[in-house]
Length: 323
Image 1: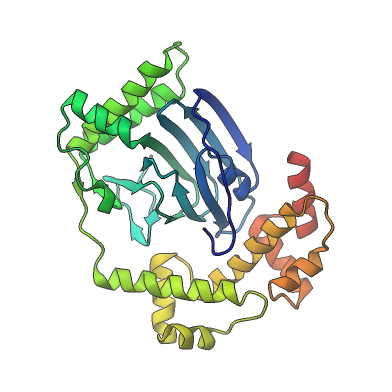
Image 2: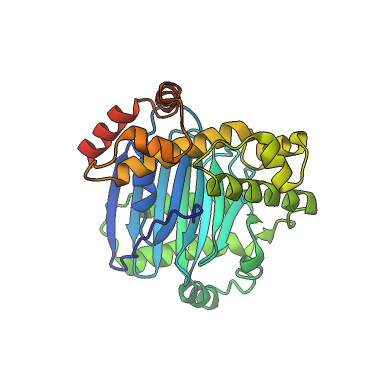
């Protein structure tokens, strides 16, 4: 997960629907059934997130809408496969790779992956047990549908099949026709397999892309490990053995922000998360900020308010009142 942070969720196999609206990114992250994930807000402004979720015995469908850009570290349960369909082409990145209008994101369960989603992000997600996919493949005759999924991050799909799948997801997720769980699940699997049957695995990431992501991962791990003090950009460059210009380019290409901005966002999100996890309010804001290398409280408070839309104390009060 996000270095030493963990969010644990237990998947509830029984069928059920729910809708969640929240002003806190971690609240959205931990309420998606069966996922381990952490969300860090990147762009400035009040956060608003909504989740519509349908749980079926072997399939999970959800629609997630997020107002701000978010860096997500995600992992779905090991016995399943995740598919992600942004409703519009919105410059999402998976493991540093951009997803275009014909792209379908996919990751097998049990393998951590990263998403960077832009402001006003709107996505449908499907999580399907492998056994359900394999059985559906046999029943629907989609003999080539599952080939290459384990090594893929992005599948290129037919636009018409993608649009048909989105319509099926919307109909099932928001259905009021009383359709049973088995019927709804079969409809989802059929629409997914029809899309997959005409899909091709997008070319693997170039070595240059893989190198840029490795630089970012090494730098981020170092920043987190030394979060209790200010890490300079020259120090970071020395640790990952790249020039300042290369470091800047790698971060902007993979995460969409500069190393300096990311460092600031990393600290502010870590402080926010620690404060909200301190349910009894036993730790002061200044003490938590100091743990993240903050020595100018006035500047910290200003930066926090700019990013999250409220001062640290006001944000904590609002989040606890909403919870």
